[in-house]
Image (cartoon, rainbow, N blue to C red; front, side, top):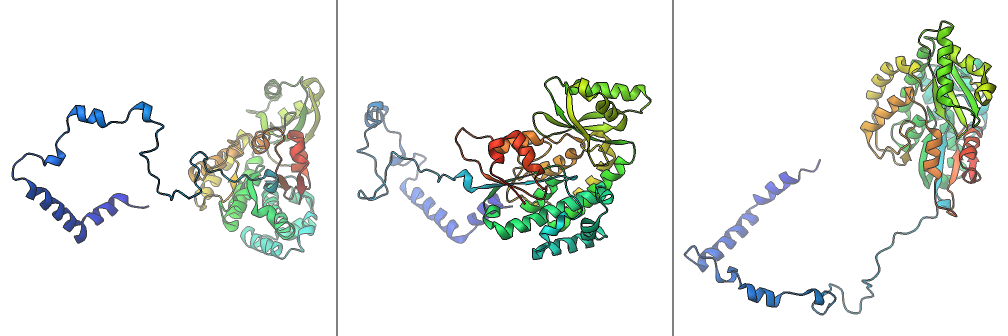
Length: 402
């Protein structure tokens, strides 16, 4: 850190500065041998000061003013400098998915890009198993497990970035904002320079294993739904918890884990509570109710057992200021280079709802007739674009799947 006060002390001790001080002192000492101040420093009469003072009527009189520029210089004092306008359609936003979207074999389309193989080689060394083989051959049931799916999702998203870099490099150069859904937030931080690929993947591995272990402590899961106007979400969760208690469940949990779009909500909680919602969905005002292919109730209190090991790993992970704006799943705000807040929010994200709908509103809200940026959906096979369409159809028109 720059030591300003130390710098001043150093300058004041230089011989040249001391000589100037001495000369000034002598000049004042030679002018008078008594305690009276020099005549040029005596106070002028008040009447003289008033006579020479400017008045309010002279405020617009510039005859007395001088300018450092030549009279012929083309300087306008009436106009303020204007910042160059950036066409939003020339900028880009990149979205990264969370787990549960990749299928066995999806990775094949990215293997023709040279650096993708390097991404998987590094991942294999860090994870201790052949991630590429699992992504190519499965089985899907194993790939869907949290401990494998989260690292696979992150690496696959970065592989999609290699395709984007090869085909549309300006999209990366002109990226102004990034958002990642759930574990995709870590992908976003890796891409933005907030953490290195190696450190980020180690953290993802710890997070995945910790959340897998937490999900095995009790029967739990997640449930997607379409909420009609009749649906009272808080009341539904309370009814589901009471039902689970009545049939003998111990301390059941049921809450909204992810806010996808206005009507789209994902419930997370104990299996007994989710079963109640599925069986009574029509009466509760829910449609398109479906269990998700994940093994835990992520972003709920059932993930609290995962925090200890994640916090330990996160504290060992070096963080840097992101080069691009990254939005937090927990707060919906940009991190603004606050590394302490980044650590805090990454921890809270595991046990708190993902506010994806709110993030999308912040990313794409703009005055009428303002162009939208180009959006790139990285590795979700179009899932992120579909959700974006439900939140902002105009923005989704300019969204490209990679």
